[in-house]
Image (cartoon, rainbow, N blue to C red; front, top):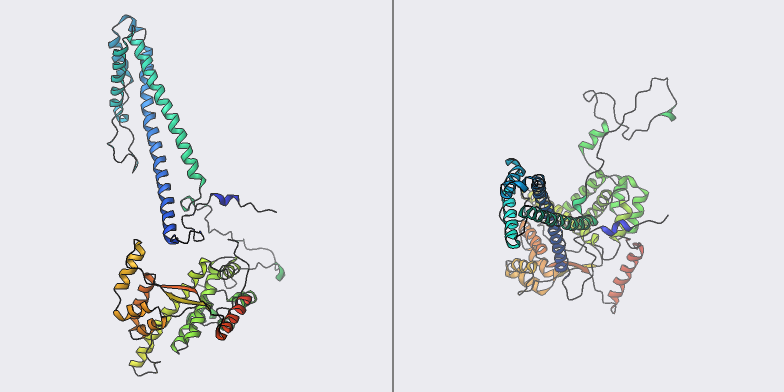
Length: 481
């Protein structure tokens, strides 16, 4: 059965990370400008819709009074033949005046005609209309002034009716354009119910085990809450969180070997639980306390891998591995940054504990340092210093942060060597170094890029073969999204 994707044609995105721009155009600036343009057009369209609705509402009230005046004038047309036409017209005007409560137009919505004064009352509008009619009659000097006044007021009523039709046409077009695009503002909760129908207890005799209802929670007790007692499994879970043997095996898989990780999860889906993720993070923390930095980072990587697969829903496993193995996909930057941030939190906390142990005379692991390393094999951290003269606001902010670093850090960054930067960070306190790393990230000075390998050397060829083997093991189809 063919799948119809036409419904997604109306999806309006304000941020498309896959957009292609000219090499001389800054991609982030282009996306930001596109975002602003879409949001401004959307806000302007909404304001126009509110303005047209308000103008039609005011015109409806005015049309009601003009129609009432026209009906009163036509009703007294016979009297105008025998009486003073001016007196008869004045009497018709007084009869057509509505109640004082309805004399004021409706309040204007916020932002509609904000630069203009509040519209006058309907009485003033009608007085202005009659002044215009009298001026036109004075110019034309008709023989039957009363009949001419009726005709002239009818012309003004027709003008307001035509204006209403024109406003309605514009309003319909704008509302059609607004509804043509699917935006986050148009998302509403449909069916939102957590009610579950409970089955009535059976009054018949005992049945075979095949007729028993399979419960989602086998430990559920039908007794009252105060009668239920916590199970031994719950007590054990509250006491200590520990990764299962299968989760420990999963932690030993290299982060770059996504094919093996995928196969392991497919064979052991029970490790996709919050308890296993927490257990692997505890393993990472214990390994960091013992000075096993690489294994601690590996445990963090595998723990967050399980967390992402679980968070993506029913097809989360397949979706995650497709996106993480698609070259250049935005999901890679998000995931690797999360791994890096989580690992640094664990590393810093472990450093504090080891320092405390050392101060108390325990078996501390020496002085802990903050060091920068690329998480993903085949990638490296590049250093890019923001230019001094730039019109870009982000680059200006980045340059201000760079100028606030110490001379030693500025010199290390200017060299472009990550080793020299780590050397300066190693001489700093953990808290100060952590703050500097955060500022480096905020300034956009550090970026994760693919490593360039010199294949003309023997070492480069060996490194290239290793990466190609990993790519062969971890290759998947491109993400259809």
